[in-house]
Each structure stands twice: as C-alpha cells, then as structure tokens.
Amino acid sequence: MTLPMERHVLVVFPHPDDEAFGVSGTIATYVKQGIPVTYACLTLGEMGRNLGNPPFATRETLPQIRKEELLASAKAMGVTDLRMMGLRDKTVEFEDDEKMVEMMENLIADTNPSLVITFYPNYAVHPDHDATGRAMIRAIRRMPEEARPTIYALAFSNDSKKVLGEPDIVHNIKESREEKMGAMRAHISQTAWMLEEMDKRLADGEPEAENWLHYERFYTYDFNKDFE
Amino acid sequence: MELVNVEQLQVLLNKFANEDVYIHLETTNGAYASHFDEKVFNAGAFIRNVMLRYELGKVAGESPHRVGLKLPHGWVYAQGITHFELDEHDRLLMAGHDQSGKLAVALQISKTPFTY
Image (cartoon, rainbow over all chains, first blue to last red):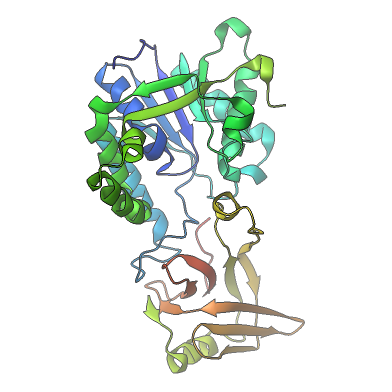
C-alpha cells in the first residue's frame, strides 16, 4: 500500500519499543517512499520490568541496553533522525506541563511536519503515553488552524473502541512486514516473550496474528472532539 | 545478578552502614497491570537518590527475602528480594524478580548518586 505523500512525519512516543508494536510498518513505508521521518523518544524505558529470566540486566544497566535497542530499531525501520529526549521512564506526567508543551513546540518548529503520530490522550493506558499525547495535542492546538499538522493518534485502552469508534486510518503494511519484525526483534529485551507467543500463533495460522502484523490503525485527531 | 546469598549480602549491607548513602527504592506491578486485569488495584512507589544514613542493615527470611535499614529516626525496608549484585561502581543492587522474571521490587544503595 502506498501512503499519501507527506512533507515530514514526526513520531513522538515516550518509550523505546512504543514505535515497534503499532507504527513501525507505517514508519518504514514512509521512509521507503522517500518521506523524511523524525522519531523523538522521550525516555530510555529505564523502569522496564523485563530484565531477563534469569536476569541479564539490572535497573542500572537497562537504559544502555534499551538505548542500543532503540538505535537498532531505528536502523531496521530506516529512520535516520532519531532523537532521545532525556526524560525518565514513568515520570513524564509529573514534568512541568508547560515545559512539555515547549518540548513538543520545539520538535514541531524543527521538523515542520505535515503529520504527527503520537498517543491518544486518555486512551493510551500508560501514564507516560497519555502525558506525551497530551503535551503534543496542546502544542498543536496553539497553532493557527491552517498551519496545524494532521495528527494520527494511537489508542488501545479497553474502552477506546466503545468511546472513539473504529480507527478511521488503516494502513496495510504487509510490504513492510520485514522492517516491522526487525523493529520488534531490535527490542528483544522487552519483546522476547511476545515474539515467542506470536511465532507460535503465526505457525498455527491464526488470522489474528497475521492481522496484527499487516494492519496499523490510527485515529485522525479531531479538535472538535477535543480531549480537554 | 545472582540469587541472594544471605551471608554475602549481610556483609555488603554492613559495609554501607553509618555512612551517607544514596537510595533507590521501587515497588511496581507494572503500568499495565489493571489494563490486563481490571480487578487489579495498581499500586507502587519509587524514590531515587534520596540520601540517608542507616545504623543497621539486615537481610531476613528465606527467599524471597526482606531487607530492612534502621535509621536514627526511621526505617526503610523492601520485601521480595531475590537477587543481588555489587556492580562495577561498588553499588549494592538488590531486586525481587517474580516467577516470570519481571522486576517487582528494587532496593539499591550507593555512595555516589545514581544517574538521573
């Protein structure tokens, strides 16, 4: 599937591996279409609970491991503009709200995106996800309407479909399947158990597993139904 | 990290007693706990780089162990400690990993501040 052309795509998530699950196929597709993509990752997932079984990492060595994984994932997707924003995992919502908006404004000013991909505030489960989406939506809301980039928002809370309906944007990323698997595998410290499960389901020919690999879904953010 | 050896861990705890040390203390059941199971009440606590001085440190019980630090005017303790390590920066890292290997609790002691 060829995606509509964009001037620049800005992807903003708080954790290394956030991009892998739901967006890596889309990112890889944009890159292959020659569209510049910037991925800003706010933390290094310092508080991740997966440290191996038996443990191969400690609380203190995990950030370096996840940084390497993030670099490998960017490489797998073909992303050359990767920005690590230096916040700490699980603390994003406690940062100064205005400082967070400024961070997003600076990213927008720097990249001049026609499309921003981030989490849908209040429907993204992890407090860091919601805080990231919140800051980005606020930054874009302050822009003159005609200058605002389109926002594709990811929602996966248990009530998201009930409240928001079905996602209106569905990308078939089958042709970027290898890049997506590459991004998933890059984050092996966090995805090992999930990949094992998925390999089993794929081997069993479960349509759900194929479906998950081939389709990425987003909500076009609508300021007429603003979250606040 | 290694499984807790009570004698070795006790020696290390003694080494940090009566000195200014930085503490990392964390308990968690994961940010997704109540997403996967709505009946779970998600609670946790986190402090990092709080400086204190303890007069007595003790590891207690069978694995998973408890580790308690007695301060002149208070206490610090962690329950569920399974693993420990003195890392290359001479920091005492203790952690509790659940049956699937996921970290559930961490208590770390260092003479120098932990990174951010």
